[in-house]
Image (cartoon, rainbow, N blue to C red; front, side):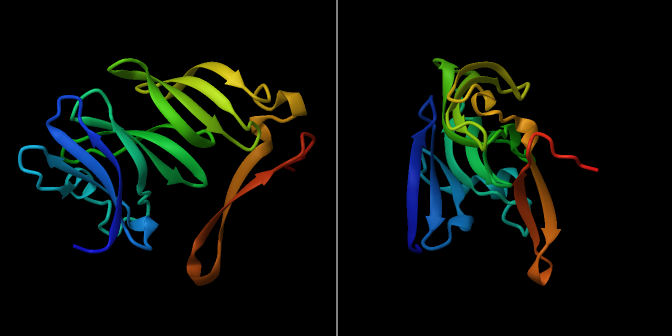
Length: 192
């Protein structure tokens, strides 16, 4: 067994599975979601079984930072880093499935099912370039914000900000590495 940090230990609602994050010491990018049956405790890497491309050289690998079983032992909701954001994804734990991002607006602080044992809608706490604190209800299957409950800056309006002011671009860096950047533009910015 190699040196690692194990965190985010969770049991599935039916008690049949246990899951945890396995992070090799000094390699946060190598984070893995390990699952095991509570009967055998033989842990396996969820992504090598479910999403074969993850961990197999896929450049789009965004390791999980946290997860919760989403009402049963067959679905999880997880946070991961993606292009400068912390996003929420749902993953069905079945062969060939891939994570489906349903919230990618800023960085997630926390998320909770809106109703006990029902992960169709989640309460999401997040922040962004234009709002330091945002609480929203998000429909998971539709990947849509249903309602904004609280916003520290009225979604930027208090300070004359708007989501349209934030843009992003990519450029080729050293050794052909693609670099991602955010840019905040003034309201009167002329793209021409």
